[in-house]
Length: 625
Image (cartoon, rainbow, N blue to C red; front, side, top):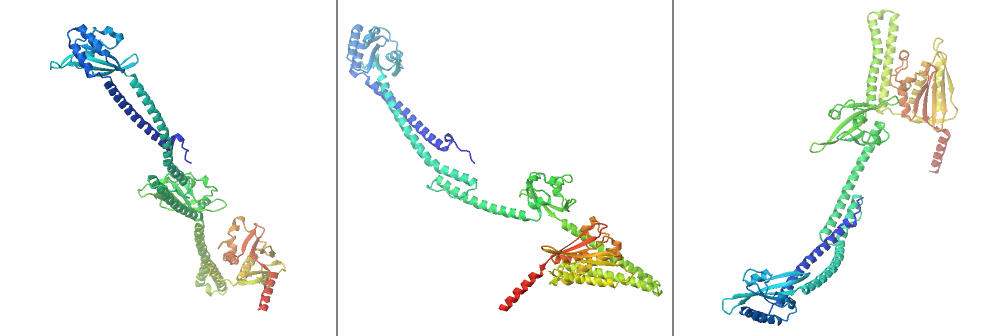
């Protein structure tokens, strides 16, 4: 928010002050010039008024030209006495010797016969340079002194016979000037008051549009672009207001465009699966998106904003900032812990201006955990397939070599060797068939033929087959018992009967394989609120806790030697998991080492009553039709 401007600092006050001062200075200059001119004119007029008539000067000249001094002095006195001019204070006449010959001042007649003290007067009497007019102040009173030489032209040579000094009191003149000055000052004061009032009005008219423009620019700076300035005059201020309106429009358009771009960028960054980190040229983080926070396992962006980017990426001990960006190889960050695996690939780029100046940097984090896991699983899968195929092939090759070396002619060994070759061949065929089935499932080309099936009936059907196998076993074969815990409630599930039968066969066969002789295999079905759970339990050695998460991996065996000896491919549980999940179900195992294992399958179900209602509604609709 802009700071409020004080009145005495405002342009409103300054305009009024400048106008008032200009008016005052103008009036003062005019006043001084006028008073001076008036004073000069008044003094000129005063000098003219105290000037002596020509006949008086002529008489005085003739008297000074006379040879009888006393008689001349008397005549001069008489002549001066005839002068009746109230403005003249004193008239003094001297001869060429500087002797006062007469004075009009009755109280100062002692001066007659004495030498005059006025230098200018004596100089005039001697026809020298003199000051014709001057002002003299005596005891606070100003007098106008006018010196005039007296010249006798009777002889034709213009001889100076003396000089005349006329002295007039100027106080009346200056009193008039003072009164005129007071009147002028009063008029000036009134004019100044009116001028200030006019200046305030004019300044208000000038500053009001500027104030409106200032308020408008403040609102623009605060992001309020609504409204516009009304243009009342086609002058510079009107053009300024029009430009401000145009500027506000352009800024609003630019701001809206930038805001739209920012929202787009925020939306992109918000929903990106890759992490994005932006930093300045010194490596200080100033932007990070939610994906990067999640990858770095940071709950609040304030924990990383302003931090050094290599510290956040845990790379400060391996790279300097320049080395980090010059490194073109992929950098992998391992953020794995005991609970989860997380591997990030780091890609970085510098932000350069056209001048080449590096203003910042962008770092992209890509989660390659699944990719690394997939690559590891692929390598492990290839290794396992190679190993699983190499073992029976090696066995087959060994027996074939033995037969070629003569065992084929041995009536006891030849049949045994051929039986082993046949068994290993069948095992490889089964393994390849399982691999092809898994491949079809991975590609999504393994079509399911879904139908609503009574799960209890299907489960009992599969168990009945195994009961028949038990009844047909020879005395020297392993014995086992199947215990059923299947409710009579009709539970309907939408499955592929053939595929699901394959899953049940695999789980029951595994339970038989790993159960001890005389063991009990428990087959149970539990109905829950939204799912029905099938559980198959054995009394075998169980599965170690560290292997529970890998039971459904391809080619994984807890007891590899025993599984291989019993003809297992290591793919049965992987196939079972793929089938169950394609039916929107779940499969998992619960086991404790030495206490057997329980494999469970959960499927969504429908009650028989619901199906009957659906069929009843369908029959009713058909009847209405």
